[in-house]
Length: 231
Image (cartoon, rainbow, N blue to C red):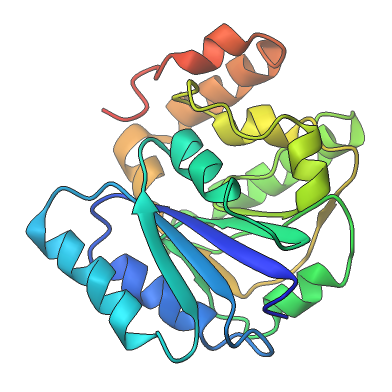
Protein backbone atom coordinates (compact mmCIF):
# COMPACT_ATOMS: atom_id res chain seq x y z
CA UNK A 1 0.00 0.00 0.00
CA UNK A 2 2.97 2.35 0.36
CA UNK A 3 2.87 2.86 -3.41
CA UNK A 4 -0.80 3.84 -3.32
CA UNK A 5 -1.07 6.38 -0.51
CA UNK A 6 0.67 9.47 0.86
CA UNK A 7 -0.49 11.00 4.15
CA UNK A 8 -0.23 14.75 4.81
CA UNK A 9 -0.54 16.15 8.33
CA UNK A 10 -0.57 19.89 9.09
CA UNK A 11 0.98 20.48 12.49
CA UNK A 12 1.49 23.43 14.82
CA UNK A 13 2.35 23.02 18.49
CA UNK A 14 0.55 19.69 18.74
CA UNK A 15 2.98 18.33 21.35
CA UNK A 16 2.35 14.60 21.91
CA UNK A 17 -0.73 14.56 19.65
CA UNK A 18 1.49 14.17 16.60
CA UNK A 19 3.31 11.26 18.22
CA UNK A 20 0.10 9.41 19.06
CA UNK A 21 -1.46 10.16 15.68
CA UNK A 22 1.49 8.76 13.73
CA UNK A 23 1.89 5.88 16.17
CA UNK A 24 -1.61 4.76 15.24
CA UNK A 25 -0.88 5.19 11.52
CA UNK A 26 2.09 2.88 12.05
CA UNK A 27 -0.35 0.22 13.32
CA UNK A 28 -2.56 0.37 10.22
CA UNK A 29 -2.63 -3.05 8.58
CA UNK A 30 -0.77 -3.14 5.27
CA UNK A 31 0.80 0.32 5.29
CA UNK A 32 4.42 -0.27 6.32
CA UNK A 33 6.72 2.17 4.53
CA UNK A 34 3.97 4.64 3.67
CA UNK A 35 5.13 8.22 3.14
CA UNK A 36 3.87 10.61 5.82
CA UNK A 37 4.51 14.32 5.31
CA UNK A 38 4.34 16.50 8.42
CA UNK A 39 3.84 20.11 7.31
CA UNK A 40 5.02 21.70 10.52
CA UNK A 41 5.03 25.27 11.74
CA UNK A 42 5.57 24.65 15.44
CA UNK A 43 7.27 27.46 17.35
CA UNK A 44 7.72 25.96 20.82
CA UNK A 45 10.67 23.83 21.85
CA UNK A 46 8.45 21.11 23.33
CA UNK A 47 6.37 20.71 20.17
CA UNK A 48 9.42 20.70 17.90
CA UNK A 49 10.96 18.01 20.10
CA UNK A 50 7.83 15.86 19.71
CA UNK A 51 7.88 16.24 15.90
CA UNK A 52 11.47 15.06 15.59
CA UNK A 53 10.98 12.36 18.21
CA UNK A 54 8.06 11.07 16.15
CA UNK A 55 10.16 10.95 12.99
CA UNK A 56 12.93 9.10 14.82
CA UNK A 57 10.77 6.56 16.67
CA UNK A 58 8.68 5.47 13.68
CA UNK A 59 11.33 5.59 10.95
CA UNK A 60 11.36 1.79 10.66
CA UNK A 61 7.60 1.65 10.04
CA UNK A 62 6.90 4.79 8.00
CA UNK A 63 8.71 7.12 5.62
CA UNK A 64 8.26 10.35 7.62
CA UNK A 65 9.27 13.66 6.08
CA UNK A 66 9.03 17.11 7.66
CA UNK A 67 8.40 20.21 5.57
CA UNK A 68 7.55 23.80 6.42
CA UNK A 69 3.84 24.31 7.06
CA UNK A 70 1.62 27.29 7.75
CA UNK A 71 -2.13 27.71 8.08
CA UNK A 72 -3.87 24.41 7.23
CA UNK A 73 -4.62 25.33 3.58
CA UNK A 74 -0.99 26.19 2.86
CA UNK A 75 0.33 23.19 4.81
CA UNK A 76 -1.91 20.80 2.89
CA UNK A 77 -1.12 22.43 -0.44
CA UNK A 78 2.63 22.26 0.08
CA UNK A 79 2.37 18.63 1.12
CA UNK A 80 0.18 17.74 -1.85
CA UNK A 81 2.78 19.12 -4.26
CA UNK A 82 5.09 16.30 -3.17
CA UNK A 83 2.60 13.47 -3.75
CA UNK A 84 3.28 10.93 -6.51
CA UNK A 85 0.88 8.23 -5.32
CA UNK A 86 -2.65 7.71 -6.70
CA UNK A 87 -4.24 8.61 -3.34
CA UNK A 88 -3.72 11.38 -0.77
CA UNK A 89 -4.97 11.35 2.82
CA UNK A 90 -5.20 14.73 4.53
CA UNK A 91 -5.21 13.94 8.24
CA UNK A 92 -5.08 16.30 11.23
CA UNK A 93 -2.65 15.73 14.07
CA UNK A 94 -5.47 15.27 16.60
CA UNK A 95 -7.21 12.54 14.58
CA UNK A 96 -6.62 9.10 16.06
CA UNK A 97 -7.16 6.02 13.87
CA UNK A 98 -8.06 3.36 16.43
CA UNK A 99 -9.58 1.14 13.72
CA UNK A 100 -6.46 -0.61 12.38
CA UNK A 101 -8.18 -1.38 9.07
CA UNK A 102 -9.77 2.00 8.36
CA UNK A 103 -7.32 3.03 5.64
CA UNK A 104 -7.74 -0.28 3.82
CA UNK A 105 -11.51 0.03 4.13
CA UNK A 106 -11.58 3.58 2.77
CA UNK A 107 -9.26 2.82 -0.13
CA UNK A 108 -11.63 0.00 -1.07
CA UNK A 109 -14.17 2.55 -2.35
CA UNK A 110 -11.76 3.63 -5.12
CA UNK A 111 -13.68 6.88 -5.47
CA UNK A 112 -12.86 10.59 -5.65
CA UNK A 113 -13.22 11.43 -1.96
CA UNK A 114 -13.84 9.40 1.20
CA UNK A 115 -14.38 10.69 4.71
CA UNK A 116 -15.46 9.20 8.05
CA UNK A 117 -17.59 10.11 11.08
CA UNK A 118 -15.74 11.06 14.25
CA UNK A 119 -16.04 10.06 17.87
CA UNK A 120 -14.98 12.56 20.50
CA UNK A 121 -14.99 13.38 24.20
CA UNK A 122 -17.90 12.60 26.48
CA UNK A 123 -20.61 15.23 26.26
CA UNK A 124 -19.75 16.34 22.72
CA UNK A 125 -20.60 13.33 20.54
CA UNK A 126 -24.12 14.64 19.93
CA UNK A 127 -22.62 17.57 18.00
CA UNK A 128 -20.77 15.24 15.69
CA UNK A 129 -23.91 13.17 15.14
CA UNK A 130 -25.75 16.33 14.09
CA UNK A 131 -22.90 17.06 11.74
CA UNK A 132 -23.26 13.54 10.29
CA UNK A 133 -26.84 14.42 9.30
CA UNK A 134 -25.81 17.77 7.84
CA UNK A 135 -22.99 16.06 5.95
CA UNK A 136 -25.34 13.51 4.37
CA UNK A 137 -27.72 16.28 3.32
CA UNK A 138 -24.86 18.31 1.85
CA UNK A 139 -23.69 15.29 -0.10
CA UNK A 140 -27.22 14.64 -1.36
CA UNK A 141 -27.69 18.21 -2.66
CA UNK A 142 -24.34 18.20 -4.44
CA UNK A 143 -22.10 20.21 -2.11
CA UNK A 144 -20.09 17.53 -0.27
CA UNK A 145 -18.35 18.49 2.97
CA UNK A 146 -15.49 16.37 4.21
CA UNK A 147 -13.73 17.75 7.27
CA UNK A 148 -10.07 18.40 6.52
CA UNK A 149 -9.21 16.20 9.49
CA UNK A 150 -9.87 13.16 7.27
CA UNK A 151 -10.06 13.58 3.52
CA UNK A 152 -8.96 10.61 1.42
CA UNK A 153 -8.70 11.79 -2.19
CA UNK A 154 -7.86 10.24 -5.48
CA UNK A 155 -4.91 12.45 -6.33
CA UNK A 156 -6.25 13.13 -9.82
CA UNK A 157 -9.65 14.16 -8.44
CA UNK A 158 -8.02 16.39 -5.83
CA UNK A 159 -6.05 18.33 -8.43
CA UNK A 160 -9.14 18.58 -10.60
CA UNK A 161 -10.64 20.81 -7.88
CA UNK A 162 -7.60 23.08 -8.09
CA UNK A 163 -6.27 21.84 -4.77
CA UNK A 164 -6.11 23.80 -1.54
CA UNK A 165 -5.94 27.58 -1.88
CA UNK A 166 -3.17 28.85 0.41
CA UNK A 167 -4.91 32.23 0.76
CA UNK A 168 -7.85 30.61 2.54
CA UNK A 169 -7.71 31.02 6.32
CA UNK A 170 -11.03 29.41 7.21
CA UNK A 171 -13.14 26.40 6.11
CA UNK A 172 -10.64 25.61 3.38
CA UNK A 173 -11.71 21.98 3.69
CA UNK A 174 -15.28 22.82 2.66
CA UNK A 175 -14.09 24.94 -0.28
CA UNK A 176 -12.18 21.95 -1.69
CA UNK A 177 -14.47 19.06 -0.77
CA UNK A 178 -17.63 20.66 -2.20
CA UNK A 179 -16.00 20.37 -5.63
CA UNK A 180 -15.67 16.59 -5.46
CA UNK A 181 -17.79 14.81 -8.04
CA UNK A 182 -18.31 11.78 -5.78
CA UNK A 183 -17.89 11.53 -2.00
CA UNK A 184 -18.43 8.46 0.15
CA UNK A 185 -18.86 8.46 3.93
CA UNK A 186 -17.33 5.34 5.41
CA UNK A 187 -19.20 4.31 8.55
CA UNK A 188 -16.84 3.45 11.38
CA UNK A 189 -16.57 4.13 15.09
CA UNK A 190 -12.80 3.80 15.05
CA UNK A 191 -11.78 7.42 14.39
CA UNK A 192 -11.44 9.76 17.36
CA UNK A 193 -10.73 13.47 17.61
CA UNK A 194 -10.57 16.17 20.25
CA UNK A 195 -13.55 18.41 21.02
CA UNK A 196 -11.24 21.37 21.63
CA UNK A 197 -12.73 23.60 18.93
CA UNK A 198 -16.26 23.21 20.32
CA UNK A 199 -14.98 23.78 23.85
CA UNK A 200 -13.31 26.97 22.72
CA UNK A 201 -15.95 28.39 20.37
CA UNK A 202 -19.20 26.74 21.37
CA UNK A 203 -21.81 24.92 19.32
CA UNK A 204 -23.84 27.92 18.13
CA UNK A 205 -20.81 29.80 16.82
CA UNK A 206 -19.73 26.75 14.81
CA UNK A 207 -23.26 26.08 13.55
CA UNK A 208 -23.69 29.69 12.42
CA UNK A 209 -20.39 29.61 10.54
CA UNK A 210 -21.44 26.37 8.84
CA UNK A 211 -24.57 28.09 7.53
CA UNK A 212 -22.54 31.10 6.36
CA UNK A 213 -20.10 28.79 4.56
CA UNK A 214 -22.92 27.23 2.58
CA UNK A 215 -24.30 30.56 1.41
CA UNK A 216 -20.78 31.74 0.51
CA UNK A 217 -19.73 28.46 -1.08
CA UNK A 218 -18.88 30.16 -4.38
CA UNK A 219 -17.33 33.26 -2.81
CA UNK A 220 -13.59 32.69 -2.41
CA UNK A 221 -13.14 36.01 -0.62
CA UNK A 222 -15.27 34.77 2.30
CA UNK A 223 -12.74 32.00 3.00
CA UNK A 224 -9.80 34.40 2.99
CA UNK A 225 -10.95 35.85 6.33
CA UNK A 226 -10.41 33.99 9.60
CA UNK A 227 -13.81 34.98 11.13
CA UNK A 228 -12.10 34.78 14.55
CA UNK A 229 -11.80 31.02 14.12
CA UNK A 230 -8.16 30.92 15.23
CA UNK A 231 -8.56 33.28 18.19
